[in-house]
View: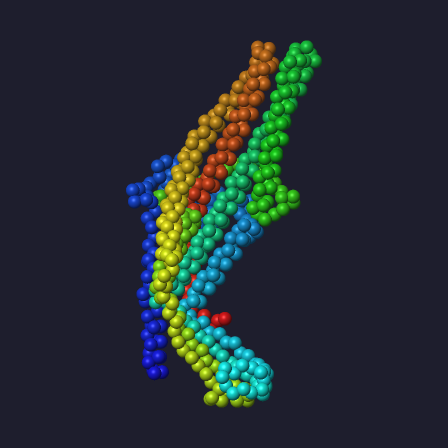
Length: 494
């Protein structure tokens, strides 16, 4: 009989995991059946596409801008940004939970040793035995062991491990996406701040010019050449420009505070030295749309969510089949501790427990239907993230193309405004025209210079967001390293 029991036990264990009822995972198509991934980008970029692909670094993508100050801030972000540190801890949490899932693939062994001295009542019920009023006192020393193992005949445990690993990879991709979003936000804020530095310089230059103009008009007014109206007009223009200067300073302070938070510094003690923006957007390699599917961590996290929901379908389906637990117990027990290791003190028991759902009021079927619906919903979410990615890249290319054209024409507009101001000044001092023409020319020059500076800032920020839309050099194959596999050493781990 012992041989039969052992053979049966070995046979059941050998079958474990060999009859998985859950669906095998296949990565869904990136687009709906009626559409296809485009073979090229619709908008042609304002640079040559032949730039080498490794121009976007696989790690610190911001180095493509060749700005040492930006590099330093980005390194501080990686080390001290609290949102990023939180995402890293969530990844470690997911890794630990995946190890918890793999523990179900091994036997669970436990012990519960006890030492007891007890006195039995002399008036205890004896269930029909002869009455006795003799109490007694005895010792009981027990060293038991128990072992249980789930025979994973229908893949419940295997599906649980697959779900845990998919969740781990989802967290890993989410961490990379958080890092990409935060580093891009920092770069955008940095270039915006540098643009505001340049804008401050432009406005301050206009203030200096307008103050000289006001001095000139005052002198002419004292000499009886200029009217009080011209003095008031120039003073009004100067006051308005000073107001603009204050507002630009306010905007700069807000971006400086935002950078402080991103790099984990208190805004009250953080300062960025002024340095007017003096750069042009670098050429960025675009590749083809299908490559974006492997570069974007948000797409990868959406795809891993699909894998997770697929595993949940397997778990829900396995609930329709028997749940088999193999169990055993044994140990030693004696009234006398000296006789604890004697042969008569040993005890053992082996058995199996099979739980087969019969009538559950439709609960298991409903759970399976819910899991399938969640799986289909995750596919739709995945495809939506792909469409959004394509949109963001196209937006980035289109923005850069349009802004490059606008910057070219605006540079010409600034030169035209400079000439117009020089002509207006000459005509005014020559007595040919009124001072209103000078005021108008000064206002036009200031507006043209500010717009030219803003366009440069927008071009740099658009470049940052295009790199972000392209995934920042990240590669989805990095997720292959983020898996927890069962190890034999786990058998002896608590």
